[in-house]
Image 1 (cartoon, rainbow, N blue to C red):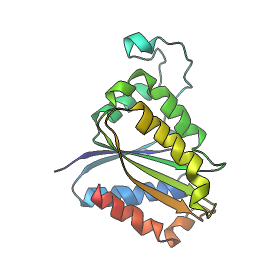
Image 2: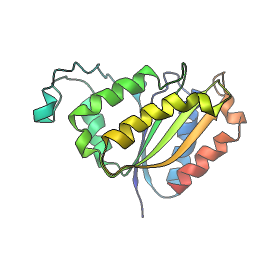
Image 3: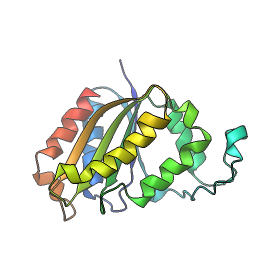
Image 4: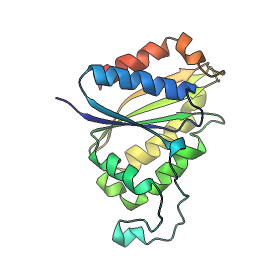
Length: 179
């Protein structure tokens, strides 16, 4: 059965390592016959959450930026991939801002399969644990009925494009095929 797959890439660099892993996942998912869309957060205007609380009763954010359309995509997806570079032990600021802005419709982002893609110069998976726990805090603890289906650890890649030389590059493709 074809699924609607949404890939959220928080890489600030074009063709950055986490972004390249997203492309591999996308290729695999398309080959499997899924409807796949990749969103580059760097190409969207997403303001910080102001904590005003208006959305608690309206389920609409008062801010006029690109988040409304991105939330609609999340609500309509079956599979969501959250991808981030890890610079200092957690997700990057672009992804955290995006997650914070999900508050207006988070109750509608339910019963989804989630995949995480992380890239880091660090060579120890254990050092990415804070980033994973942050992502799980959002998906497992805040969203109903979600399933964590896989994590892609793009470790040991410092320079842009280095990820292509590592086994995880093919792993991302294979995981996309199985989503």
